[in-house]
Image (cartoon, rainbow, N blue to C red):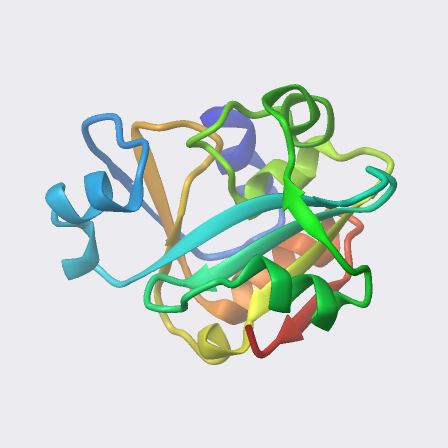
Length: 160
């Protein structure tokens, strides 16, 4: 998994920095590992609409409070909820706790809509999982946007 992400970044000449660490499963774990000292941390949410027809990957600044009711309205889909571990595996090929924009490389049908928090625009160094719990890939907003677009997904910036 991690190797596939790193190979993708290298093959596409997308600059990144890799930091390997103890397995982390929550934002609290990441803070306890001191990862916030290396750059801006991003939290990632995999959600779906009420009918389960549309799926979204939300990447938000660590300090952004995400209100699902408001988010559903902003996305124009009404009520949203978290996607199940089965849906997460089906669409992004990752387990809970490993949700990351890098999982979009496993979304071969580009069924997941990618939304990034406006607060992250222009960020020079943000951390996301390379689809594993034991490492963080640091890259700029511009590099993340380029990577997601090369995976075939659109990048929608939203004030969350």
